[in-house]
Image 1 (tube, rainbow, N blue to C red):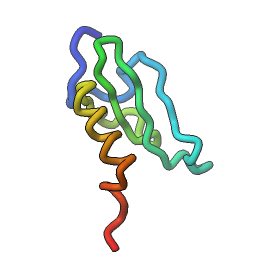
Image 2 (image 1 turned 60 degrees about the horizontal axis):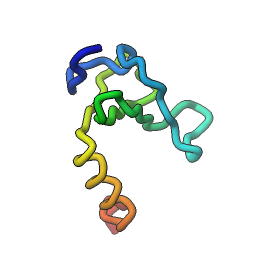
Image 3 (image 1 turned 120 degrees about the vertical axis):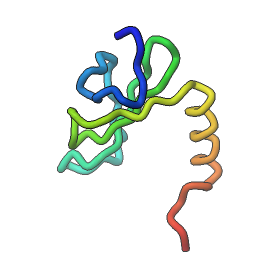
Image 4 (image 1 turned 120 degrees about the horizontal axis):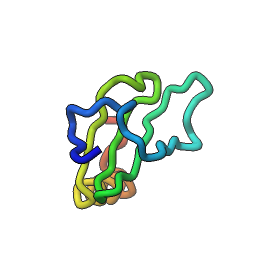
Length: 76
């Protein structure tokens, strides 16, 4: 695939998908794929023909830093 963007279906991405060890047995999880151009794709594993969100490596790094800092927890 020469150009992967946010209009790409997850099933069209050939990179291996990675699921969290915290995923439930019903497949209710978010999965990511590291693309060869350095981007990171994210999708809902229950909908393989659904859309993938695609992030640049800088966007993905910023998200991970925020998640590790607790910025994305549920509101109190």
